[in-house]
Image (cartoon, rainbow, N blue to C red; front, side):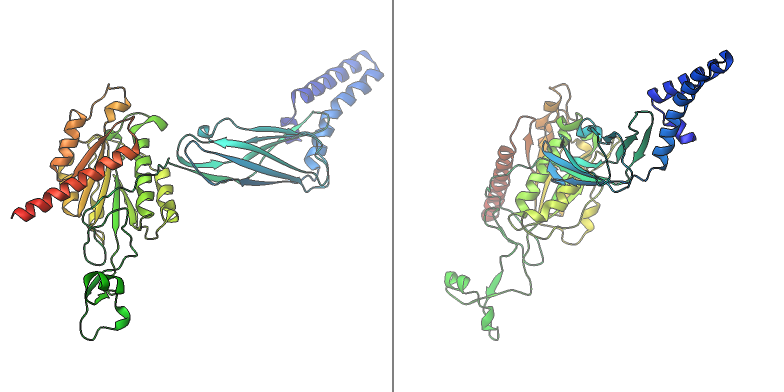
Length: 427
């Protein structure tokens, strides 16, 4: 009864108040006819509430997402399947889905005629402009009696998860040469042709199994060459994301951090499609290698990028703890925010442990309309600071295209490699 009284609607409270007033007044005035009318008005909301509370209605809910993973700016559709598995029909059924603020307004539905064996399917669109992992639900339900006297509030426990991944751009297959590391020898490869499935070969030695002869290399070299299967080569690349709060400006989808995350995701997919084992390192943590080739290999890494947040505080150094992991060397590509002189030590240490170090340095001032500058004083000084630590670095501004920056970075690495080769020849 207490729950029934607490669930009365405005109409139910009005009937209850009118019934009490009419009954008391009629008893004082000695009007038995009005007493009966007052008792009827008093009993109607109480009986409706008692019947609704004791009714054996069982509403089942099923929720299905058309796509559980969508890119930022994408849209998916949520389908709700509702069934009344109870014996008693209900009146109005009001539904309200709980959604995070980033996914838009909460959808509401009003359904009528919820009888025995009733089934209904409703759907609504969800658009996400910002990356992240969001929980859809639970669903709140209001069940009312046919007279509109009582509304019972219930909530389903089931929820669904929507992963909104960062925006990924197809990068051009430019010639990006340098040192590579893996389980075998270091080799120079180009992104357009490099693959972890390639084999290394050596000269034929007496006693080698003829089944290991690599005939294509033998024809090219003019002598027998055999596969070095005991030392398979694998290209590896580490992607470093500078997600320190001190290194970025702006908030939400328009911040420099979102551009950095999107650029790292684009590079990760680009490398994985060309046979590279890729791992992600940030200012706070690092992840394991993703060894499989193709688009599926980067799904886990891109899901991690979907939930990357800034590391708060000032004076936070770049993380270099992952350098102690197995498989150092090879390629290191960093997407850096505003860097200063305090980052020079970490950048030099990173450079010493890899074959090729390349960096995209964000011009964070361009995200704030030129009202903010990097700690190093200017974008040119920031790039010079990274280059001075032994890296190949190019700037990236707010309006720059990813494809243009990627091509410029490849040219910078190739030019540095050519200069080192020329210097070695002069010696």
